[in-house]
Length: 274
Image 1 (cartoon, one colour):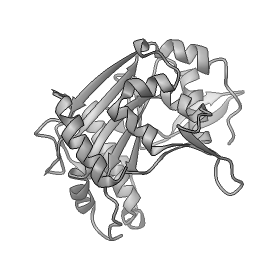
Image 2 (cartoon, rainbow, N blue to C red):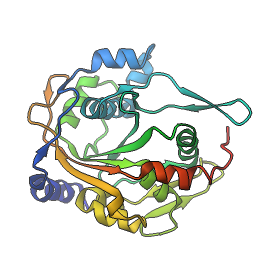
Image 3 (cartoon, one colour):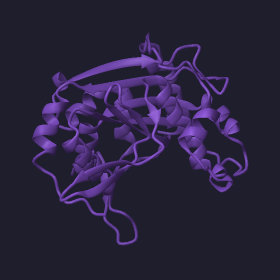
């Protein structure tokens, strides 16, 4: 599915079905203060990287919509004979006990799940089962490469009207995709020159906006264990004063998440490589 067709289908067929407006924790998001707070000592060299600017946009959007703060330090977890495990979530919401990992993926692109990251979140869940982890996937159609020296605001301006959809996916489903052997869902890479990973195919990833119930079933879960909300960003949502186009968002909550952690994570831990 190309950029134009996905964008058209979502805007014409999916967006009208998302009639419930999300109540954002912050309607007017300003990046400068948060960027300075979240990335102390941010160097000029890092500021020129497109992927940092793009990632920051969606981390701020995730925080603004669902709450929490951009995590500016690693979370330290003691485990296995007082060793230390480092986890760096994008957005940490201690009030609601949620961790959110923001993933920006261009249309046609896949979701890469690195073994190390999945293992670390698994360990975190086993030690802090009261927390819920979500991956927030954002589809955009910003395919052109921006000039390395453009400002954050220029990148944000592009993304403000080129974000196609969002999907909030619980870690239980992420974990299942990472472990899947279904070649219609994933591809597995175990190369000596790259960290081992599983990539979730673009077509399957799009199911989370088109038909999340089907995605859940394909991952061998029962839909009765999930609450699915089809939401849309409000008309007055802004980023750095830039008005955002309406974005349809599917929010999936695993109501039996604690049971899943107990049954699938607690008893299946493997050593985490450092």
